Length: 207
Image 1 (cartoon, rainbow, N blue to C red):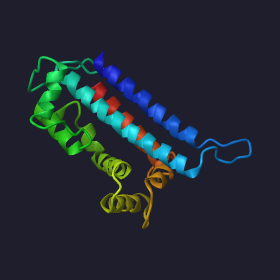
Image 2 (image 1 turned 30 degrees about the vertical axis):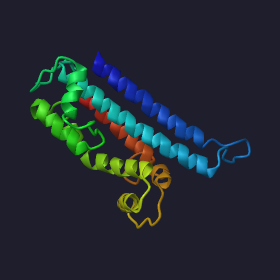
Image 3 (image 1 turned 90 degrees about the vertical axis):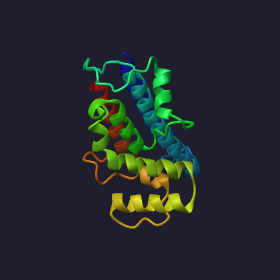
C-alpha cells in the first residue's frame, strides 16, 4: 500500500535523524564528548534539516498517491475533485506554472488539500491542528538553511515564546537540544517536533 510505505519511510527517517544527533553527543570513557562542540552543533542542525525534508517528502508522496485514488490505511477512499492519470501528473498539478511546489509552506499545503480533496480530508483537520507547530518548524528550518539577521530575529522570537524569556543570540542548536517546557514527557524541542510530525503523518495516513 503506497501510503503505508510513505509512513514507514518517514518513521525510518525520524529514527535515523534522532540516532544521528544522539551519536553526535556520545561520551568517551572519561565522560567527555567525543565530538567537539562545532561538530555537535552542525550534526544536530543537519539532523533537524533532514527531518524537515523527510516530512516534506511524506507530504509529496501522500498527495501524489491519494490524488490518483490510493486508499488510506483504514481502506477509505478520499473524495477527490480531480483524477490525474498518474502520480507524476498529480504532482505537476500541484506545481502548476511554478518550477516546484513548496511543501515547506504549510499554508500552501492546506490550501491544496482543500482544492483537491473534499474538506481537505485526510490532510485536514490534522494539519490545521498543528499549524502553529508547523510554522515554528519552518522558522527553525529557515534558520538552519539561511543565515541572516531576519532569520536570527525570527529564531529569537520563537525561542522567547517557547522558553518564556528573551533569548538574545540564541542558536538553532540550543533551541533544538533544550528541554521543551511544553512537553509532558521532558522531550527536547527536536524530539517533540519529531513526534508531532510522525503522529500527524500517521493520522493522515489512517484517513
